[in-house]
Structure formats: structure tokens, C-alpha cells
Length: 492
Image 1 (cartoon, rainbow, N blue to C red):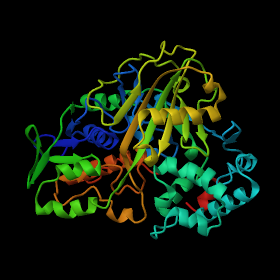
Image 2 (tube, rainbow, N blue to C red):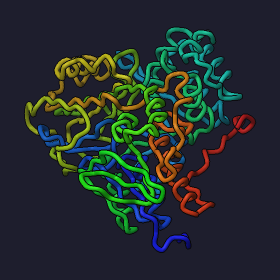
Image 3 (cartoon, rainbow, N blue to C red):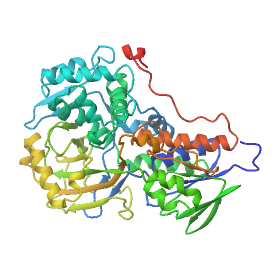
Image 4 (cartoon, rainbow, N blue to C red):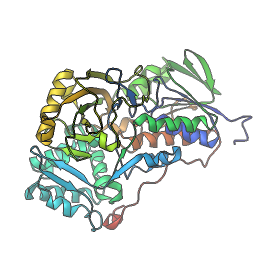
């Protein structure tokens, strides 16, 4: 490895989410001695699963999906050997209350026109809606707009969008993608989502859904690290650190010394770890500009099939997505194998205990997702379940006749940072005032919003910084974006 070191440098990675795991895997592969500190008893961070103690079911803390444009996330999956655990879909089904469906997918036309035939046929929008949307997409096609401090909702109104276009197209896509209401979203990140997923190429917009519980994916990252002389330490909270000229000392119960440290934790957790010194003040001030936005997942188990669809976007109601988990996972998950223990869960969980026999192979297990779920945070478990069942019945009439066997509500109150106008000025780079300390997390300066792709990009960027400071000047872990196709090649 580096000749100036008598042995491979020792790196602490604080946080076992995607940012920390991607950094740790890249560094372990390069020859560093890596130790991951994770306060929970499982890996994955906000993209994790656990066995819920009251239901006996293994549940994801929230449904996570990826797109074909997530090049670094896909490289990470290939690195740890789980790429075959992702199921890909080319078409999305948009359902109106009452059940009328609009199916959007690619055609033979070159990008950015590849979804135009399906879009023009979609009954959920009328002709004025479609004309307005097409005009706005045309404005976003040549070049990605910069953040001017204006909200994307204001931008849409300036560009003549109808109310139905805003509600059924722009909000539907962007609230799910960015986990924030569009009146609080910067133009730059809204435009990036549309360009990368809708306009750039057909492959960029493909949706991937994990076919196993999330922690089963990221356990493989732990195996990858361990196989390369690294270590993952669970139930280990780092309370603080002290940066010295030639080392970094971490305080996690005891004191441990490392050559480098990567802090891959949410920004609010980092605030609690920072040393109480004046050197930390600029970063503390920077982090004070961040806000969070919640996600709520509603897990329902029925005694019969309620739909043949594997997933659907739901329009005009509080619930925004339906994921038919018993179909996506290819099996019933009643009393499934435990992914982790029930202790240490980072999310707020409420349940409705077993109301009958376990769901068998003829039942439906569905997860309903509400992004930017601010209106649900103060609601009780029963209020949320009643709301979900009422709305679900409008889209899937069979659910009205099915028996609800059990249910679970999971609230991620601080799920993601809010991509508000102007936030990019405060997103820090991996480097810090301490030469041996680096940052990772989807909230850092990745050029992407709060996504799994952004988290992995941040981990790879931090790993590159560590490797280069350690003497590997040509170290490079980040992979290029998907190339534009068709007419989009003109614009890049």
C-alpha cells in the first residue's frame, strides 16, 4: 500500500448507513484497516429493516426504491454482490380514486420523447394539463436551472402550469423523490430529478425495488468489510472525538485512536458529536441551517389478495404509493425470518396487533408510503390506519371486503434534510477543519438530493479524500453519471 506507512492506516467510519458503508467498503478494498461504529444492532441506517416485536414481521423502516440513473448506488450493489436482489420495472401505474389507471412507460422514440406516447394517452390528465407540462419540461431540457431562491412551485406557476398538472404530475413525482412539498423545494433539485429520471434516457428512469428486506442487502456490506480485515461494531455510539496532528481519537465508551475518521451520520447526530471547541463553531453554524422532513410507512396485512398490481402511484389522496410487498418479495412474510432484533430501532413504531390468523400465501401484504408526511406526525396509530384503509378502498375495492390481519405504522420523523431554496450554500464538502477528519452523508455536497445515490456518492467522495491524504493521489471511487441518449445528447 502506501510506502510511508509501516502498516496500513487505520480508519474509523462512524455510521453504518449507506454513506458509511460505501466509504468503508471502498477503503477496505484499497487496503485500509477499517472499523465501522454503528449505534444500532443492524446496518443500513434509514434504509434498514427489523423484526417488529408485536407483529413478528420483518418490516423495512420505509420502502426504498432506486432508478437506473443511480450509477454509484448500482456500483455499490455490484461491489457487495447484491445486484441480483433488485427487481426492475419500466412502467409506472398512476391510479385515480375509483381505480382508473394511467400507465407511463418508454416507447421507440428517442429521449426526451421516449415517454411521450404513454403520456399523451394518460387519462389522468387532460389536454391543457399535458400542453402545460410539455412546455415546462421543454424549459428544463436544454440546461438545468440554478437555485435562485425561488421555490419550484413558484417556478411552475410562472410557467403556466394548471392546478391539475401541479397536483397530479409535478407534486406526485417530486414529493416522492425529494420528500418535501414543492413550495419548499429548490428549482435546481426539482429540475435535476426531472432531467435525470424523465428526460435523459429510458434506462435512467427504470425503477428498481429490492426483493429482500433492506438489512439483508446491507448485511452483505458488513461481510465485505469483514472479509477485507475490517470490523463492524454494533451498539457502539461515538460520543465525541479529538483531532490531533497525527491521529484522531474517538470516545465510544472508551478511547480508541485512528489515523483517519469518516463521520457518516445525519447532520443532527453530528452536532452532538462535534468537540466543544471554537474550531467546531463554523460547522455548527452551517448545520444550523438544515431542516428535516418526515416519511411515514403504513404496513397492512390482509387475508386475501386486494390487487394484481405490484406497485402503484396513488393520486389526489394522502397516501402516495402502494407497494404490494407480498408480490415484490415473492412470498408471504408472515412470521418471516428475523433480520435484526427489535431493540435499537431508530424509528417511531406503533402497531395494531394480530386480529386473526396469519396471512397465508393467498393474502396481501402492502406498504403505503406518505412522503413529506407532516400532517401525519401528530396523528395516532388508529387515525392513520383508518385514513389508510379508507383511501385504499377508493383505489382497490377488494380491500373493503378483505380482513385486516395486522398493521404497523412507522414514522421516520427526521427522514431526510429539506432541499429548500438556498440550502446548497450550506452543504459541506467531505474535508473539514481537521485534516484527518472527513464527512459523509446525503446532506453533504454531493450534487444530489437526499437519496440513496446521494448517500453512496458522499461515502465514495469521503473515501477518495482519505485515500489521497494518505498518499494514494490517484484514488477514485466515484463513477460517472449515465450518458444522455437520443436528442438529450445535445444538451448533456
